[in-house]
Each structure stands twice: as C-alpha cells, then as structure tokens.
Image 1: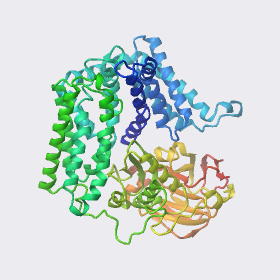
Image 2: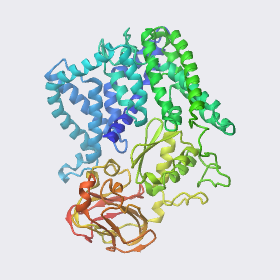
Image 3: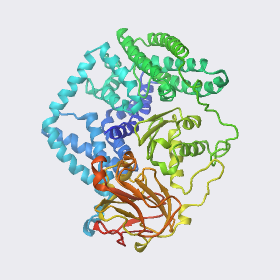
Length: 635
C-alpha cells in the first residue's frame, strides 16, 4: 500500500508541474502587472481544466512507460465519470478527486491491457487502442455507482475540509506539522492534494490554492506559513550546519549546503536540505516539523494570507504579492524564524554533538588513491559519473530491481538492503538516503534527479558492471547477442505459465526489470532454461541469474519477497561462474513450506538485457512440464 500511494504521489507531480506556468500567465496578465487580458485568460483556462489535466497527468504517471495512450484513456475516463454521474444527479461535481481517480484507473488498466492481443477480426482494437475502450467501460460502471453514492461522499469530504478550515490555528498547525513529517515517505503530495485542491469552496473553486487565485478573501491560510520556513528558516538551518561543521570540512560543507539553501530561498524546493540532516539527526527534523506547524499558526493568528502555484519561495512570494494580505508582515516573520532556526540548530548541534553534514564520524571525502568509476568524476557527463558511482554503491546492477524517481529523489527497488553502502552514496553526491524497507530505498539527489535516473537506467540496461578502474565496454547488446529460438529455451519449473503482467508486483508486472513470463509452480525442482553461465546466485538463494550462450541475461526469481526468509526452504546446486546446460538442476524449493511466509510463490522468468531492437514472444501459456520446449523465442 505504501508503494502504491508513493506511486500516486509521484504521478501527481506531473500535473502539479503545470501550475507555475499557469500561475505566471494568470498573474502577469492581471491589471496590477501587465494588464494583458488574453494572457490572464490563458492562465485561467489551465486552472479551469485542472481536474481534466490531473486525469491525464496521473494516468501517464501511473503507466509503466509514460505512453500517451494512458493519458488519452485518463481524459476519456474523466469525461465518462463526470458527465455520467451528473446525468443521475446534476449537482454532482467530482472535480479533482474524479480526475485523480480516473487517472489512477486509466494508468492501471494501461499497464494490464496495453499489450493485449485480440482475435484477428478484432485485432485493430487490440494493444494500446484497447485501453481507452476498457477505461470507458470501467468508468461507465463507476459513474452509475457514483451517481448514487457520491453526494454522501462529497458531504463527508466537505465536512472534513470545513472542520479543518474551521479549526483555525489548530488545523493549519497540524497540517504544517504533518506536511513535513510525511516527506520521508513521500506521501505529503497526497495530503497536499486534498488541502490545496479539494477542501473548501468559493464560487465553484475548491481547495486553498484555487480559492486563493479566485480571490477568496479567506484562502491562503494553508500556504502563507510555509514562506518563512522555505525562504528563511531552512537556509538559516543550513548556515548553522555550515558554522558547526568540522574545520577541515567546512569549505566542502558550505559548497554543498550553500547551493541548496539558495534553491530553497528562491524556488521553495526544500528536500535536499531536509534530507541532508533528516536521518543523521532525526531530532533536528522533528524540531523542524514542529517549527513549520508553529509558523503556520503564527501566520494564521496575524491574519496573513499568501499563496503559491509551486512552492513558497521568493519567486512565488514576489509574483503573488499583489494578491496577498499583509505580505510584508510575512517577511518580518521570516526573519524572526530564520534567527530561531539558526539559534536552535546551532545550540542542539553543539550541545548534543549531533552528526549533521560535516560532523559525521565517517569520512565522506574521496579516499586517497581511490579510482573513479568508469567514466567517473574526472571525465564524461557528470550525471553518468554520479550514476556509475550510485550503481556500485547500491550493490551493483544485480542488486537493483527497478529505478524510478520523483521531484528530487530516486525511488529504487532492490534485492538486498545489506549490499547498499549508504556512506558511499552520500560521498558520491546523495543528500540523503532513506531505507523504506528491506527492498525499497530512496536516494535524495536534488532537482537534477531525472538526469541521474536516466543515466542509471541506461547503465542498468547495458552489459557489464562499471568498476573503479576499468572503462565500460561500449559495445551494444544487439551486436553481442543472437536470436533465441524455441528449442534453445526450456521451461525451468513445472507449472502454469502466465503473462508477466499478472505478477502481483509492480517491478515485474510493469516490466521494469525486463520482459518475460511467470510460472505458478507445481513441483519443487528448478532447472536451467538455457545453455550458458551462472552469473549470480543470491545469498538467500531465492534468485539465480544466468547468461545464455546467445548473450541474453535471464533472472529466475523464485516467489515474491522471498529474500526476507533468508534461504529457508531453498537448496542450491550451482554457484556464480558455473557453466550450465538446459535442464541442469539449479535449485530445490520447498514451496509448501514457504508459501505461507511470502506474498506469493509465483516465479517470474525475466530477460533483463533485451534491447529495443529485440522482441520476445511467449508461445505457450497454461500448464506445462519442466523441460518443455517452444515456450518462447527472442528475435
């Protein structure tokens, strides 16, 4: 559930990223700026269509490959849901929640049916063309249901929103505290969506953000208190950490924290600062969350109203100055909070000897004589350099299931958390590291995270492992591999062969690790599906990597989350480096013993290094015996 909510939070970032452009057009077109009506109308049009844009953006964000077909399905789903429900009850306005719901459903349906094959006489409507169709059908059913039940749901949401609004100082204070507290697990976006886009109503505009720009004289209470924190408080905290850093590291610490402090002041992007001390000194982060709530309360008590389209930085402060109430008082509050942050952080760091950046016991400076990772920091693209280091620090390519990212952080699914070198990640540029679970980790990079993630994905898809001294071979996989015919591959486990999309794990079902299929096992023996070489046997014995003589890298992952049972019920018969032939025994697994201890024993068989020029086709689904040929081919 946490991973699913995090995916929704990430997906929300795409439509939210439209708001700065809309805000610029809307404000610059107003009479108190340039007085250009068509510019203001253009910005207003974006705000008017935000629920639809949320449906499109969330669908694309939830889809496995960001294809436009998912966005089209999201738009169709929203139209069907909104208008269908209104035909039953014309007072219904599903608005943002309808857009988000339509986007989530469209994205999930795209992942499930985006490659569906229909009978020849319906083939034209197969694949991605089928997604808008099935989305429309699904939303018709939901429209009928929502037409009856939505008024009750809406009343409940309105009551909750009105309670939070009417709670006054307590409501805004608790919201500010929770907003910061949820950042480590990435769920603050979900909370913000309700407060900024749903709660409250003013002339048809809902949410604190929309009502503020619509001119609601009571809107802005859930945004004003962030300006003192992001423009003054956190930069002052960064200054305190620089001043208290060890003398021999102060210059390097100032270089790191100075840049992200300036980013926080100008743009309101705070995560790089927050993650720099969040896990080194949780006490300081708790104080920061409390001070954020206090800032929200003080802004409310002094009747200060301000708003933003992206975040509470100097750009939004100046841009929306004319719409704000008592904005100069907000600057004074900011200066006071800057002093409070500096004094508290400085005192606690010195008094309690907290390990903030520059004070850690571990030496994060480059070790003497250390060689760069291939294409490392002495040459090549800097994002590829950082990615190469991160890949190694995360335990190598074999330890990485999938790579994703949001606004400032990498979201990684891994096999074994114990292989992750957190200190090295920080040394090589990470502002912070969060271990969500044994198989999920987040690495805070900053606003350039997209470029690092793309470079990591590129390296993950390449053959070979970057090393500290050797350059990575630049040969493409298509030049080193040959086709894999039906007779070259045998079924490794007796059981039912099912599509990879039916695996109840996003990393596999969305083909983040590669294409393939899965087996619902019927017997305990696991054999090699190809002739080749064993490249990896995980310590927990739950997965085996094989490189076929054709050059294809194949991962046999027995069950889901089986790494957590640490080899119980598994017996291996090969090790890394062993040559194997089709049908040679790799593992024995007591599926009955482990079935109750893991989410599923379904076993994905994944080709992890397929190039864009290659296509994998599974010919035989259903029940088959171990050793059956003709299961698939790769051309």
